[in-house]
Every structure is written in C-alpha cells, then in structure tokens.
Length: 71
Image 1 (cartoon, rainbow, N blue to C red):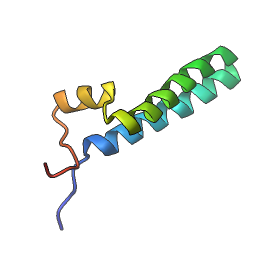
Image 2 (cartoon, rainbow, N blue to C red; image 1 turned 90 degrees about the vertical axis):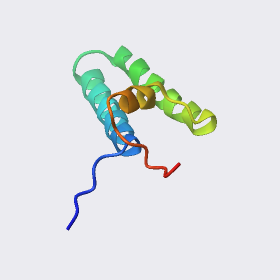
Image 3 (cartoon, rainbow, N blue to C red; image 1 turned 135 degrees about the vertical axis):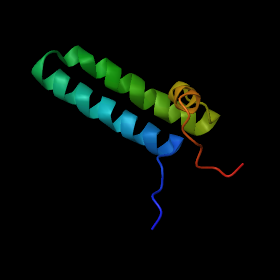
C-alpha cells in the first residue's frame, strides 16, 4: 500500500479552509473587521480560478510540494 504525498492543490485547499475558518472564529470572538481577511482569501481563490495563478501556490512549490498535474 503506497502513501500519497500532499500536492500543491491539496495544501492550498487546506490552507484556504484553515484561514477562512480561523477568520470567522476571530470575527465572532474579537472583531467583525477580520471578515475583510476572509473576503481577501475568497477573492484570491476566485481570481485564481480564471488566471491559474495564486501567490500561495508559488510559495508551496518553492517549499517542495509537487503539482497534481503530470505536466
């Protein structure tokens, strides 16, 4: 049985989900203005669907994670 390593796409989804959940918790407990960060994360995910570019993906690739594409 082989173990599949985490890809850039997997890590990106995990990080985005973490940031969104963290910012919602912080907005509910500290200050609603933290939701601007949530909007920034969502907008970045939205634009990356069209441009195929995301700053976090560049960082993750430099950290050595492999792309899920075979190209």
